[in-house]
Image (cartoon, rainbow, N blue to C red; front, side, top):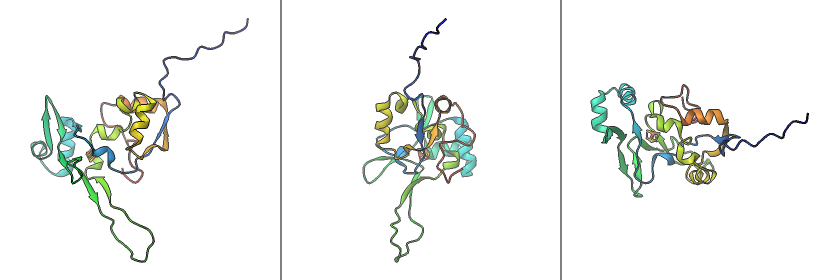
Length: 177
Ligand code: SF4
């Protein structure tokens, strides 16, 4: 008996073939319009340990209360954008006047090893994953999207649904832990 042609799986997400992303450390996902960088109490404890502070001090210095949750503070920069409190400009360490290579300052996260889950799973969030158009719109601000490392559908889903830090987060910048 002839077999029936297989039906297309209409439940497949648009990114069923996977997506590419490699963090370029642009810092663009840490600034922009006012927003929220959600941080859980457990993450506040991890951050406190990293900063050698008490959790209450971290909350007082770096967090704001939104309903029953916490978000990291933001600082308005010279361009009027809202920077995460932990975003800072890193100047090139040395300039060789004879070198033709132009070294640019870059924006870095000063708590990268203990950054919250939200930061660890960018750009595999509901917003950018909502459609190919939303993904490519996010790519206009994030130079890491559509570059480098390939993520399978199952890797994307597991990052999208993560409720705690993925071990050795695959979204880390190449030279970061
Ligand atoms: S915690 Fe770090 S990675 Fe997250 S938004 Fe702030 S600066 Fe960016």
